Length: 59
Image 1 (cartoon, rainbow, N blue to C red):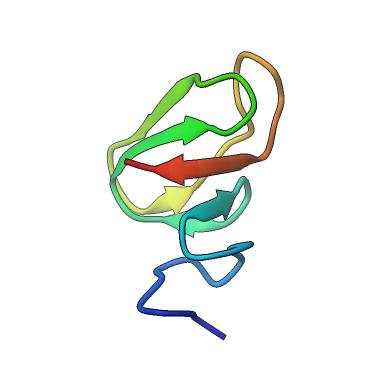
Image 2 (image 1 turned 135 degrees about the vertical axis):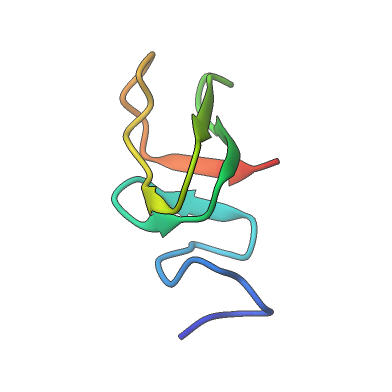
């Protein structure tokens, strides 16, 4: 179930999104190392390319 207009069904809370979940276009920051990942369209969020973490915050 989506929480508080969150666009990610797999969120830990409304600001956290995990890799493997479909996300909208935008910039996501790894919550472990701060690496930025940019998605150009709605697609599956990858694991962090720097540290392999799977939890991100959308800017």
